[in-house]
Length: 292
Image: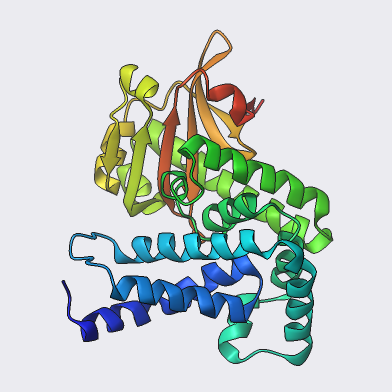
């Protein structure tokens, strides 16, 4: 187990990220700080010598703590909203202003409060922090597909609830996501490996469910080089589609979807995860629409 000093230094390196996640989930700076402190206490009591990605581990722990806090609020919802409005009125420190960013971010924080806790968590982790659904699933006590459905429902509700600037921001994010996915398939069809490596995050993970794996997909491929090699020659049959309200693609036979591609795209426009979903019991719940 790492010594206390080195563990503390590692934690401090991730504190701003964890605080950002907790704040987006909870909508309160003080609650976010409490969640991050609890994550530190859990880290200090846990042997993490076998943890490969401490940032991901801490994100999961902080998210679980934040979700528990969110679900325990109940009648406190209006009190917390009042706290957020009071905070915005009295001002934040420089580090707090970085979390809000601009008027759109502040407005988004308000409408996030209208979502159910698990919807809110799935949307925040996936859409704002590019956490793959496989990593979100255990936090919401579900599967990757159910986590995707939670985020999809959140997205639809936010479009209905959001004021103009927030709706426009969500649309712009979807447009950027679509452009990245289109560039990925264009590069794959042309075997432009340099372009694929530019689009793919170095640590990208591609996972296939059991049905997609039986169709010939590898169950898991990690790293930009390996994913780029795998997709070569396999992209020709992919058709653009929306999957759970997000830009993606499908393999279809005679108009029937056999496998859906779901993508996780980071804020800097890189693909961090690709999900291949072939389970016929799951596909109907993904709200797939072919792009004509």
